[in-house]
Length: 94
Image (spheres, rainbow, N blue to C red):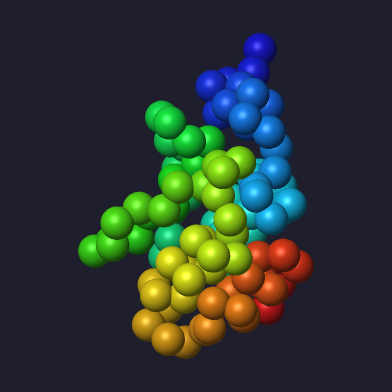
């Protein structure tokens, strides 16, 4: 039996608006950015959390380049640009 998170991914689609797999983005965020918490959401498959910031939803309606990458870049205090973050999320490595 599938868990609730897998059901949401299949119902809403497996990819983000810009064509990246939702589970792959979540896995890459968790492995590349240790300070960011990736947790299942109630209305979205995943929610990214960082202390002191509003959470960032990760779903099929999410555009990773326009929403997630800038959010993660803000958590790094300028250490990485949104473009660097996006490329790292796509490839899974720095």
